[in-house]
Image (cartoon, rainbow, N blue to C red; front, side):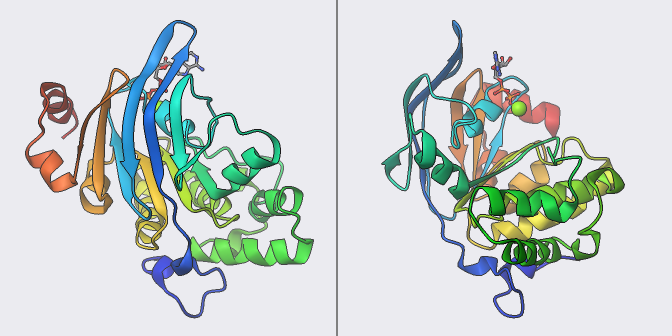
Length: 263
Ligand code: ADP
Ligand code: MG
């Protein structure tokens, strides 16, 4: 349906093929809530344009790991560098700039219920990035076209299926032309028949060259699309490997136990 759209360079007004990409580096990145340490000083280097799948049991720290990247959570210790630049303790316009470079897609879509699909996308373009109304609307329509939803532009979220809402959320996350896009279990809240349409959009996006980090339970997606898989358990990164190696030869007993349960 939308296959290939993101990698097509001609004939699309919002062309993702020239998206810039950024590296992400965790250096001894740690997060505690009170005296509960949920991320134990992890190191991880993600290259520009890389697609990384984060796997691990519930409560292992997956959401925390990616929420730290755009500071939906703040680090307790260590550092996260984007394109080699430290991001800790950014505030004000520097933090807004960071967030415009990093798109985030939530499990529960988090669309504004009182705004149309199109307005969900134009809101930040106008209010945060200072686009004029016409340009923002045109950009939103182009993005909706790329996720196959141009005809739904005037619908409210409640009028859309879960899969459609998540595709709007992806379009919204791409509005500021981010260099990194983060997904936190983007298909976990969807009915099974809607998972495929969202994964297809994500596959197209993966091929566009943007840096992409995806927390997921979709093992097939991790296997086919990710450049590397990161396995996290108990707040530690236990394994980092290309999917072929990760699934064929998991190194850690905890990884093997996890894979036995989910495969
Ligand atoms: P995952 O996404 O792998 O399921 P999370 O990163 O959401 O795991 O959570 C890791 C741990 O941190 C869990 O034990 C969770 O209960 C705890 N946690 C997450 N968010 C908060 C918070 N805001 N306050 C306190 N504890 C939290
Ligand atoms: Mg989570």
